[in-house]
Image 1 (tube, rainbow, N blue to C red):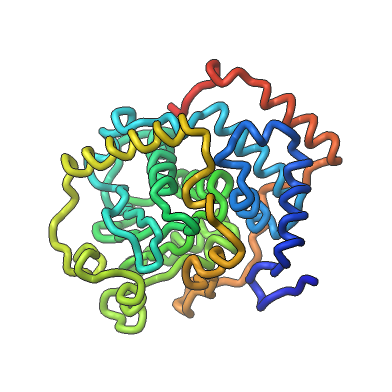
Image 2: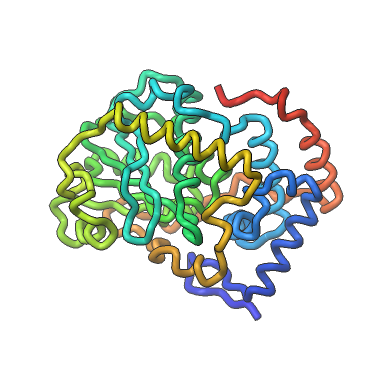
Length: 334
């Protein structure tokens, strides 16, 4: 038996119904999905199903497109030395702490200027996502984005970067975001948010939380989620040391070794190996809340940019044909 929760929440299915959906998605894609152990686990397929509201054909098309993307771009093969120059400013980095639910934390500082092309910025973002996901604890599949708006102004605006970031997050890493905290965004950001909000699906933008340092109510979000002794002072915490590029480089090279070992193992992701319906329900708070009434909230539905696939046979045939690409001939993200 299935039923709908409150508006904006998932369609709740029994374990048997979920497994039936997983099996149907795998059947739609065909044997090719087994070539990707990290993407073919039950937990991984479920993320694509949740992202497409349990519609199996749309979920299969989304997963198929992601498998093709991974064959062509090889995101798991990007290494620190490939992208290190883009990390020097500390514009985006993985924190050396988790939130109280064990979720990996990515820190972003959009106020820092980035001289690199959108393509290179997205490559670095993909590297950060791959690294953060591999760091997730067994049974924990989501991460937190902490976005610091210090120094942000109108010259920091890049609609293209925002659009491409939304595509990477939603199309290639569905259901990996647990919460995005926008910390101290200036008033002028409200107009920009209205402009770019349609890039994000409702499931994504409902995970966005605006937090202000001088607002006791929203600041409590930080205290509830983080160890304040470890949290950076720029987010109201007590940690005053800034971004250390040399120390961070060492951590990332250790992460590269971990990634290489994982790729060679051919195993599912650690976060997926013990994921069950129960652990997914307890992997963090329900962050699918509506934004506070700050003049920028909206309940308008965002139209999905992924149309229904054609007949089942066409979908499977298309996937099989495209996945015959020689991996050694594929190009990485540039």
